[in-house]
Length: 509
Image (cartoon, rainbow, N blue to C red; front, side):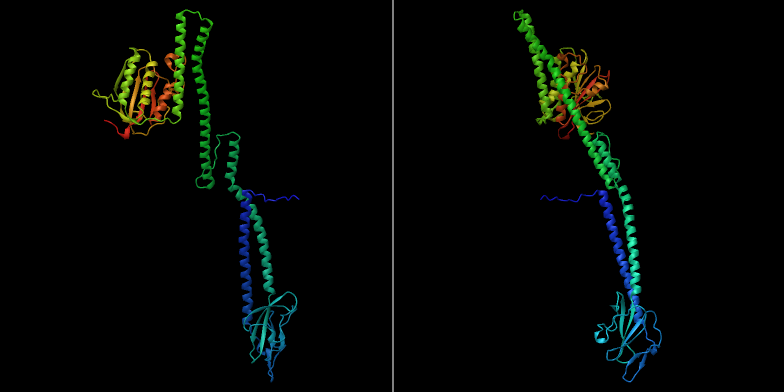
């Protein structure tokens, strides 16, 4: 026999709140009504007890006999209200009763020995028949040895309590109905921000990633929740955008790398096929073909080396932490560039601060990898030689400064960099490579640090390079805690700047 397991389905938050508030309010109303009924019952009973205590028999209610016996006199007077008095003689036997009425009287014993009452204390006893009750008080009579029991019915008290209970039931029912109706409205309004959050989440799920939660009031719980969720959504959207950008960048990188490798590979393949088809070519043509094959193989080798270097720099490269003199690096780069320029460019070395005529070159010390930093400086100088017309002077400046919009290291309009800015007023060492060439437009400057980007796509690859040099220089500078930046404008020349934090924060004068 298969037994089905029944589980209670959890109610919605709105239903739990409505029923929770309703039950709590019902409990409060019931408690208040119970206290009111108990107080009313106690007050009415005390009122009856007071009437019993203050009750006084008429003077002619007793006749004196020699035995001595107490006999009620029927016409001795009419008792007030619904009082009933039962008399007992000195022997404890019942002698008679005063008072009457259509309702059954109290159920009293025939003798005082069977009364089970405490003299002077009010007690509730049942009626002789039916479900009525009486409040009785056993007292001593004026005549020696005799007693009597005075009683009042509790019909008035019970009637008042019955009416009060009926009224309380009506009030409780009306209160519950009103609480459910008003509670649903109040809870619905209170949960309206959550409903809006639900609709916003559905829109985001449907693809509207720009939606945000409208309730962000920091004074409310839902507002604080909305603020936190909006921050989370912003970060998720940024992560998605970065992922899409990285994916697009990877596709472009692979496409550019394939394009760069295709040309030398095609050249090598063409000359190799030519050599196979015409083995009897003249020696001069074979030597020219071999030179082309060797030159393109070298280009492919350099390109692969650059790609491997970029991959290594992207994976937390290990740099040496040796003392580095930026002035020596700049001097080595200028010497190498003077030989490479072969008289087509004038390359000079000068101090960074040229505001005074007597400014001198200064030693600028920092900590880093000398070989990698020299690679950066050589790349910047070579870039100036390759991309400017012959005869264009190139000035390499070295010095120290404080990071700022004018000196470098921070962002400003007209300045581009692929690295984050340094803090303002940080002591920095600077190597500037400035030329007086045609400069770059704002659109070209924005992309100059991208991999495989060339300002002039038609430029010969023998002179223009692979478009990875500035990307490599930027990655090395960022790995040293600095950055490579560009100040340029159309017709204003280019100033590439290597900015590095000084060793131990010392700025040399």
